[in-house]
Length: 317
Ligand code: SF4
Image 1 (spheres, rainbow, N blue to C red):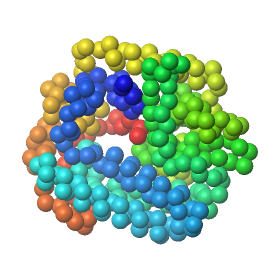
Image 2: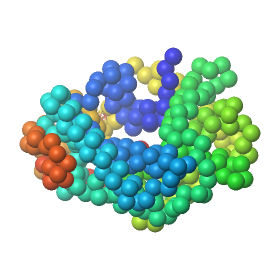
Image 3: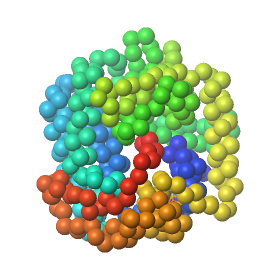
């Protein structure tokens, strides 16, 4: 039985063709990992380490930043290795013009600082789980299943569970946006179905926008009625996905970040319409440097792989 996730379903509704490449045909990405995902993953790993250590010690900010740097170097080396194995022209993909690996490394360090200064000594609640997998049913018969990973599940002194989520991109949601956002509400469906959490007196959802200097966070709550509607909504989405035989392309500026752009003539055509001064991705790949084996070199990795310019925001991850 297929198990869906929020990101898998979102992929389909952003572009069915991209969904087909990734989930139906299971085509490995023909280009390197994007820098936004690379940064987001390192930040999440550092936060996991911070909270994992708390029962023993509260890490200093310096120690946390060093850990982030160690992760960055280690994963960078893996990207270099993968580049050689897969014959990629560059270890990592940077889409936005004028942005460098160093910019993203510094952003990551700043995100940690922002978060650390706001929540030190991290005694607002007690961690119940980190990168916690939730697997849940949308219907009583269990025909429609979903799963997800909660960045951090915590409980407070009042017996309320908190679902924490870190957003590392530069898109900040408004209070209204989070009230209508489905991702964390779906995780709540998962938490509600777990016997371990039945006795808690409520669930709150918390978004941390770590890319902003005051580390803005927003909180929302879902009624049972909303959760029932949400389950119906996602059953209907899954039914639509399963019924699709065509998987049409849905071109937009997000095509610039699509790892399958090189396999998609419609997407490439759209990109050229947006920016006829930018070379196609194949040119971008050809011109990218290929020998970057050390972090220092990665920090010098300049604009060679940043040939596209866009103002549209990336989806949240
Ligand atoms: S390049 Fe654009 S249209 Fe083509 S698969 Fe990717 S997102 Fe869809």
